[in-house]
Every structure is written in C-alpha cells, then in structure tokens.
Length: 333
Image (cartoon, rainbow, N blue to C red; front, side, top):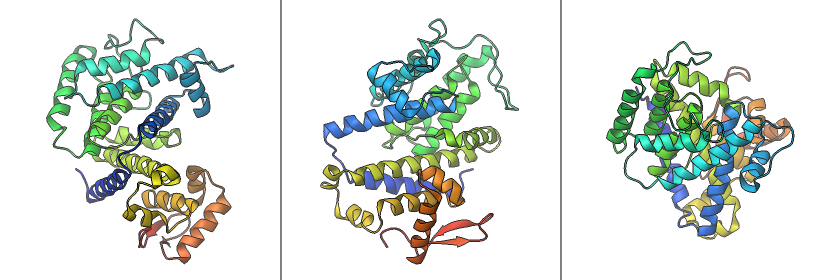
C-alpha cells in the first residue's frame, strides 16, 4: 500500500523536477558533462554496494582514461568498465518504446562480458541463494516465464504508476527473480534508472553508506513493498537535490534560470542549502550522520543547524538521541 508519506515524497520529487526543468534547455556541453558525471557516480556507487574496492576517483581513471590501478583486483576494473558500457546503453534505449527481454539481456552482457563471456547475457542454469535473505529466488525452470511476466508488467504499468513507484517495483521484482548467476544488483539499478529517465526524472544513486538500509528495505519488501518504494523515493529526492546544488553553483546555468528558482536559492549559503536539504529528506539523521552525509565537520553541522534554528527554518522535536528535525518553513519563505 502506498502511504500518505510516500505520496508526499512523490509531490516533493515532482516539485524538484519542476525546478530542474527551469534550467532547461541546457547547452549540449552541459548535458554531456552531466551524463559523464553520473556515468562515474553511478558506476562507482553501484559497484561499491557489491564490494568493489575502487574509489570514485579511481573509477573515473579506469573508465575514462583506460588505466589500471596498482594493487586493485582485475575484476574490479572489469566491473567498472562493464558498468560504464551498460550505463551508455541505458541512454541508447531511453527513447525506445517499451521494455524487452533483449534490453535486459544486453545490459547484463555489456556489464559481464569481460568477467565471464560464457555467462554474459544469459539466464542462469544453476540454483543460487541470497546470503542473509529468508526468501528463495526463482527456480531455474521458471526464469524465462518470470522474465516475460516482468517485462509485460512494466509495459502495462509504465503510464499508470508514478515513475518512482514504477522504477522501485521494477528493481524489486527483478531481484526477486534473480535471473543471472551474478550482476543482478547492478542490472536492477540500471533498469530502475532507465525507468526514471524514460519518465522525465533524473537517475537515483544509492551510496554504499546506505547499503544496510538498502538491503533491509529490499528484504522487507517481500511482505511490504511500500518500504522499498519509500527508500527509493528518498534516493530520488536526494539525487535531485544534489543536481540542483550543482546547477545553482554553475554561473553559466544560473544565467538561464527563472526568477522563482533564483529567489529560492538566495536565502541560504551553500552549506546551509546542503544541510537543510538533507534534514528535509532525512529528519532522523543525527549530527554525526549529517556530518558524514554532507562531508562536513561536526562543528560545522552544529553551527549551521544553530543558524537554521535561529532563523526558524527548523526545530528539534524530542531528545538528541530519539528525536527528529522538523522543517518549520521552506527555504524561500
């Protein structure tokens, strides 16, 4: 069941989309640089969730410069290069009508071909188990039929469900089938982002920092699908806010933005914008979690929060340990 809280997040994401649309049309060079920016960011984060040891800067060197990183496993390099190729394929099929099994097989083939060419782009023929999960994935004999059902479900619902619900449930249904011997998580996140892009949204990045929450929400979704939808809604909003901050910091883009957006960003400093945005999306974050997420020191977080409280933008409800933040008014009020 989609709750009122999730619907409120849909509205927030839709509003963020409206703000992002205010920056369009973007120059071709800007569009290209943004695609490359997320090519690295999504490749790094998606691989990191699965234990890949490359840092974000190392991932950039591997996929953009074709260099190897001394001391890092060869497979980690293959995963980076393969994911980048699969990411590029997402944009190739973004405007195509409908989703097909061939699209999914091609995503896996591009990601996995350097790791194991004999299994790349082919459904598994062995039974697999998901460590830490109480639920079985699809039996080998059922995979073709389940994948056909998945594709039909997507095509039947693409214009019915909210894009966030569509993307989250596509990801969820795919990993519950687990059609490949390896690489299912990477392909699931690529499919999720394909669904978002096709329906006018930006991609959603799940940082490795949230791996526990990500796995927990997926496991819980077996009985309560809305939990995973809620998690993905948070990630969509967080990624949108990151992109809005990038846009606001780009003077060449700011020249084209409308007056509504300009007035919204003028109220806060860059640090205040960052902290306020994260508190708005994650009201239960502690000072330490805010510092880690925003890449700021704890004293900076404390000082910024004090400023936001004094200007009556936020307030603390409950104790430091068990309470949460509440937004009193929006940034432009």
